[in-house]
Amino acid sequence: MAEKIQAIRGMNDILPDTSHQWLFFEHTVREWLKDYGYKNIRTPIVEDTRLFVRSIGEATDIVEKEMYTFTDSLNGDSLTLRPEGTASCLRAALQHNLLYKQTQRLWYIGPMFRHERPQKGRYRQFHQIGAEALGFSGPDVDAEIVIMLADLWQRLGLTPYLQLQINTLGSSEERAAHRQALIAYLEQHQEALDEDGKRRLYTNPLRVLDSKTPSMQAICEQAPRLLDYLGDASRQHYDEWRQMISDANIPYVENPRLVRGLDYYNLSVFEWVTQELGAQGTVCGGGRYDGLIEQLGGQSIPAVGFAMGVERLMLLLGEKNLLPAADVPDWFVIHQGEGTARYALRVAQQLRQAGLRVVQHMGEASFKSQMKKADASGAYGAVIIGANEVAEHNVVLKPLHGGLPQQTAAFAEVATAARTLLQQIQAQKETD
Ligand code: HAM
Image (tube, rainbow, N blue to C red; front, side):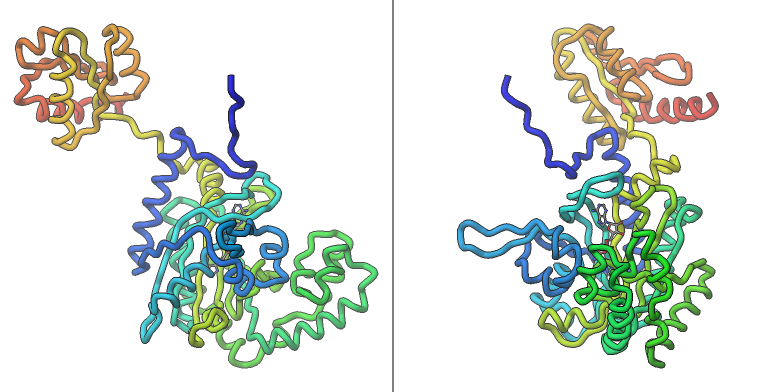
């Protein structure tokens, strides 16, 4: 036998036993985004590598070591599988002039690619649903985004399991002043830094504070705080944002160490975190990135957005039993005998046209084995067609749940009869 080829490590299939749960989640999210006036945008999975280097930042983990970058063998261009959606969304908005004298609320869904070490909740191909509000300077829209996410968690039943963490990163000048102070401070403690810390001291000192190394915790705690370097405008933005979140009765914690893993942020940043998923507990992250559009060749246009990790949310929803059961057909059509397949196709289509969900057995098999398949499908009832039914132009409707008796229905009335009986079966099943 030929060797079976496997999926790439860290890249998962979503199989029929769980795909209905993804569809449920995506449906809920789509309706929610519509309620807040966001419009869908779809961009390619592959982009010019420079797009991500310029936006996410050269000294970030993503750009340093996690991008799937390759050379287009036809023309030598450097291409990258997108590690996130913001850069692509902005590239498209600029390329198609979507920001000319107007604001945009955009959302996207799709696979992202990062070459990380796979573990529960962390994959190499994962899915994000993200939204970007372009052309708004906030803090009202920063608050709207938090309020909107809190609403989604409510709709999904996740509110008790998620904590909102917020921080402000100030302006680039404020960050530069803080950065200088931080580098000077870390230089004094150089001997205590781990390898990553030493490497990042000059390239990305804020990320040094993100370290999980126990021996560095005290040094990180005592480090100069960005908050102390903020000017009045940044402070006011932060205060107003917090006030609006409080007005909406959304609990939050301030986390001065929250810096996010991408370089483009300023002012408001936030993450929604759960304790229920182990190390990969951040299910959604985002913030303001007022300088990015200009950095990508556009005007100076303020913007804010977020992305959620679909796999992590699916894990959490699954652990808390918040996902729907598998879809089942209303009716399963079985048939045996000369001419019954043709008749069954007509019956099944009539039922579907009346709004019913119908699966028909294909090919020849005994009634007994077809009945087993009908049971296994989870259908509410079976439509049984033998030579007699074809001759008499009717069908037998047999409930598979609730103990109701079977009945015969004329071909012309099959849809009405099947619908009425389905309601009775469903009602009966509920009281069982
Ligand atoms: P991010 O924090 O890098 O932000 O990713 C957002 C979310 O994607 C994370 O909170 C996490 O749930 C999920 N995620 C990230 N990496 C993985 C992975 N390897 N496996 C599974 N899930 C993962 C961004 O990507 C920004 N573009 C968000 C944003 C939009 N900021 C402003 N607008």
